[in-house]
Image 1 (tube, one colour):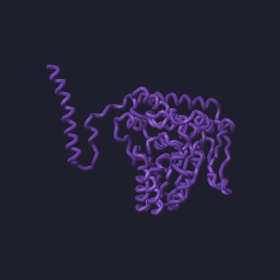
Image 2 (cartoon, rainbow, N blue to C red):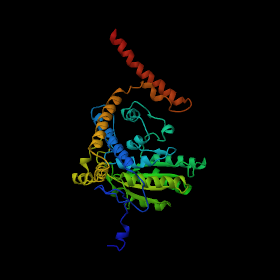
Image 3 (tube, helix red, strand yellow):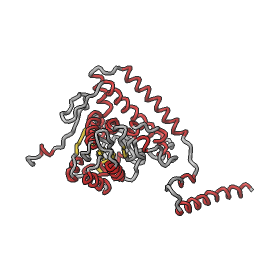
Image 4 (spheres, rainbow, N blue to C red):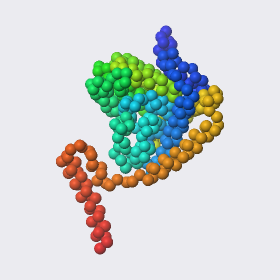
Length: 371
């Protein structure tokens, strides 16, 4: 065994243990009061309920697909609440918790997975880009946006920063590594936030990287840090520090949130085919919501009435999710061609005309049947 084994063991920044003990960290002090921690607990519970309702809606045929965030709530809420009003987030397709923090309407979020909208919200209004399905491409989009901020002179104490979200699987994509390089050589104000949930669909972490993911940053010339992705306080403190560093002109940071995807990759996936139950049980003990509840209970910062009120609010929210999802109107078929390009495009117009003719053919069949 190498003498450097202990040194090589990756550090895991943690402020709140699974047992609900607040430990703190010298490099990431967090001045936070009971009210803010209760608010974080509320976020965690409500976002998990939105997620579970969406999974049920997909099973009932109301959504075409859903990518569950179960187990990753702390990574998303912690980092989402660290964002400033002028910051811009570039998500993948699982960042429902960050969307919650950016006040994205639920029907806008559900509409995309129901297939009734091409987007769902204005990215500039909310500081939250549209979901990105192509794995890793949002890292390049975020880096380009950050370079634009830099060239517009918006870097500084009161400036803006960018955060790009992706999973461990995306670190195997060329786009992500190209983004790292562009961000490094341009000293771009961007935070790369990798939710390492251990599985890139059915591929385990060891098939993605021979070293801890956060250490890849050193090869590109900027800092990387690994945090307990199930610790909402660590996610908040470290992301806040990384964004501040970016705004002040000190360049990019890679944050690896070490967490676990407790559900399926999407509702089309069956995780029992490639991972064992014992692994899931181990991570259930590190549940991000349970540890915050334990902290609040141990320190007398919340009583049963508080927890009951959050549960009641979650029930109300669940009903709202179901109602709003089923009320989403179906778009007209030809709307798919709207706003593909800013200016008229002959190829799109030709495709639109052909599709309109195809749809009209069914009307002709119906008319003949009536005769």
